[in-house]
Amino acid sequence: MRSEYCMLSRNGRKVWVRDEATILSDETGQPYMIQGVLLDITERKQFENEIARLDRLNLIGEMAAGIGHEIRNPMTTVRGFLQWLSNKKECTKYKEYYDLMIDELNRANSIISEYLSLAKNRTINLKNQNLNAILETMFPLIQADAMVSDKYVVLDLAGIPDLLLDEKEIRQLILNLIRNGLEAMPAGGAITIRTYQEGNKAILSIQDEGPGINPDVIEKLGTPFFSTKEQGAGLGLAVCYSIATRHEAAIDVQTSQNGTTFFVQFKTSR
Image (tube, rainbow, N blue to C red; front, side):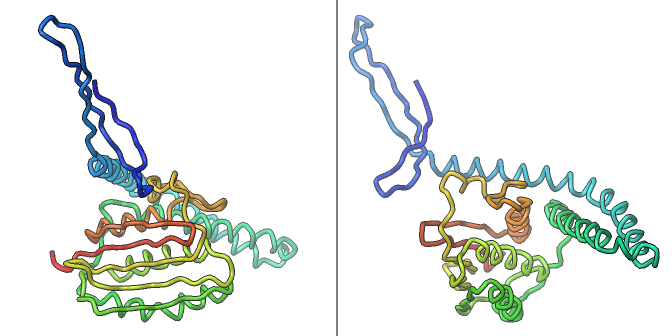
């Protein structure tokens, strides 16, 4: 007999186990004992979940590449005519409605842009660059984002080697993770951005002081169209995971009631 199930270890960590039971019989064929073995299959389960998540991302990416541009083209035409009509004298009294429609089209266009970022065959321009330099350049923008909602940003950068990066994609990954953290925190909270080296990996960590993520949804993070936010499109984290995959990097998450930390682990040599 064999079954698989999830249980909690003494330290509260989720562990997947496989229970293998064998019925032992005596020389007459009468069963007299059940011998059971518990095998820790957590690592295998995590690997299977990661493969399934990547398969979903690849499927969504293929769909994005196929239909994203076809949707965007007619939207561009509609937006152009709305702008033209809103500037006509006889339409001035409806300008508020035209502006609202244009804003909604802009929002839809930004979602399509994120959707297209999931494409597996997306071309990236990798160059040897320093992650710390990118963060320092972005820091004024990040600070401005935080100050709007009365929050703070702490930058703690250690020496790390140059990495093969597409700067545009890495900036998008950083902003998505930071903005998620800012939205998760009440006023007065702080986001801490760190870089450091661990073995043959350069680590970027982004830590917030929010209430943490429900353990039940941790495995769903990065799944396209899954969001814990009421107004979320469910693409921000999925885009981050896609960018990480294209950079041969991995994303790990640690969460508690005191906050959540996302770790992006880059290989320092390929």
